[in-house]
Length: 315
Figure 1 (cartoon, rainbow, N blue to C red):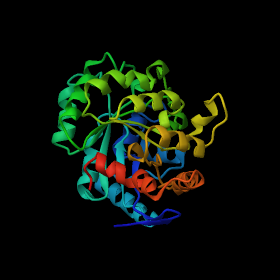
Figure 2 (figure 1 turned 30 degrees about the vertical axis):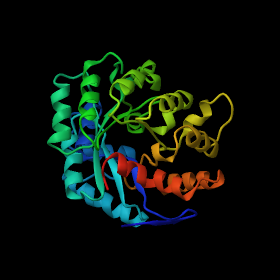
Figure 3 (figure 1 turned 60 degrees about the horizontal axis):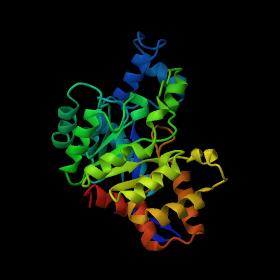
Figure 4 (figure 1 turned 135 degrees about the vertical axis):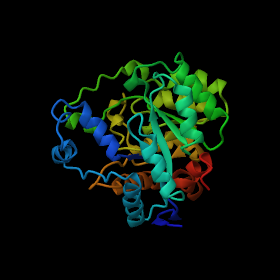
């Protein structure tokens, strides 16, 4: 088992938030682009436009690239998210290729027909563990959409699964690079919209990424009221600039530990594309923040891997 040397001792690191940008992911984006949609070499053009390395067609080959990248950084594993709806098979193949390193998650649009059967297949047939909802992106209410309720009910019956809900500010960098519109409905981004579901489906585990991405106070309220709500720490956390009073990452971690505790905080980076690969600087910043506030070794071990492994039964 890989470990990293830190001020808290040798820690096993499991990244709870990374994106699996498959070949199908880029095909889907290219198909949405007016410049690229009809070009036979659209994927190559997309790589040139972004400066990113385009992945191999076989998702298991991309999984091997990720496994090597995690090895290079001393990271034991990651929850990898298929980042367009309909790409469940890609990340399922990745998890099957490296079952001790990669746990699979998938972006899901519950407004589409047969939402329940598609989510059931992802959990039961494809072995995926986390369904990722983006209500602002796909324009639905967490309290009124029947597909959302179906997903929450499925996770309620399946230990080792979770429902990830993106809240707060939402920006998709690759869409900006391609000039694609991002017509999101930010009114759907409040974490408090999850409260009724979390209270009703008490065995369903909900994950709010990026400390709520600008809705930190609301995220803390929700997590305080609902013990089945977890918070991930991923990304640069630029949302801190929206706070009424200046805050920094140590302050955010201290408040989150006071409210949520280490057992419901999940370390993540939001890593996604190559050649950048795994974003070690975000790990370093989070280790430094926790060191500065005097977090305990027990808290660090939970945040940097123990909690997400227990959550997903990925022991």
